[in-house]
Image (cartoon, rainbow, N blue to C red; front, side):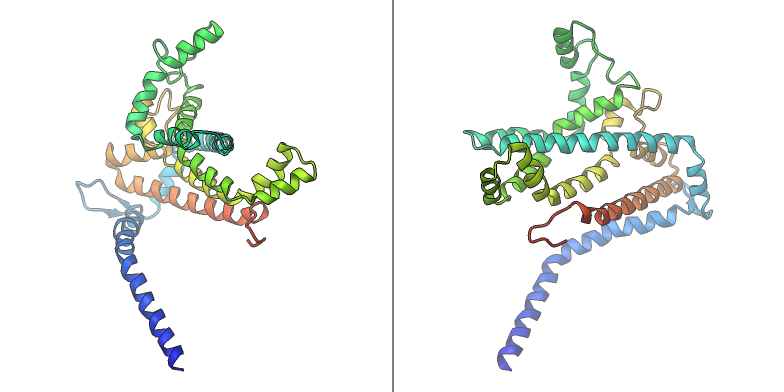
Length: 302
């Protein structure tokens, strides 16, 4: 009995220390995340422009939002970027991770090189790509001309090419995903590959039947974070295109920013933020539900 009481006291003391060390993070979460979310929820039902007191108008902001063509345009642009950019980014990240997983001299150096662009400021990266995609003097069009003999596209000035251009730019920052995939690949038990080789399985069959299922939890994590990130695209639109041409890169968050900090229509912008919050939350929940069908955890658990 004495040992049981001592064990409970130790557990209670460890729990107190746990909450003590977590308290700064919990406090920061409540003040800087939870608080603004609740306040914006209130503002979404008001007409508010900073200069005047908020006036309660019920669901009018949401009604105006869903009747606004620009809302649907920005939503479509963001959805297009997400549906194309996220799968392409995941496939490219996995491909690079598989190449880096081969034991060769300087593997860590190559991993570092691929990761470095991920730590570059988004503004700096955007300015760099404005230069790279310059239709007259950009490196991309110079190489395109030397290879094909034809003049390259107007990457950022053509509404048909602007989103593909931004997706191409996003591949520059895949280092974080590559490193995470690489860690997942290294966690796959080698004996599975050895058994497959004994059975005569080709490398492609090993990839499809062993590698991809074993790293499916990593893929789920990167898929969810990639989708959330793609719905938050702002810097590229603000620095590189200003939402153009012809609203072809008018991303949802860029539209939200324009409403909040250019038009000071904070009630309307808050409604936009809540629509995005609820949509991404429901989408994440749906993916977690559907993931049980294709995500395989070691040990066979869900």
